[in-house]
Length: 90
Image 1 (tube, rainbow, N blue to C red):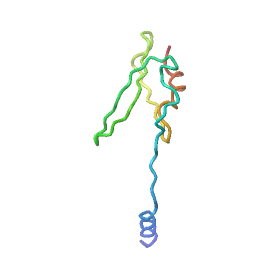
Image 2: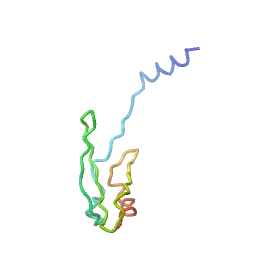
Image 3: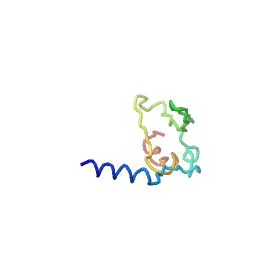
Image 4: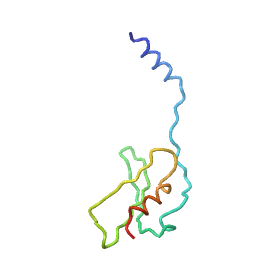
């Protein structure tokens, strides 16, 4: 009964694992899209530093709304600039 489980565990121990490697080159930055933003660094509990951009609302915009755009695959945050322009009031 446990043989399939042991087989799966055994195979997974010998398989090579792959981690996502984000692209280090930004395709664009918010400056090129004329978006007001701030650079931010998020430090995780295991001391990993994650870079982020915070897009600033205009004075007329609703300051009580936040939208987090995160990509689950290779790439980087510059790939989400077009979506940020759609959500950021100018």
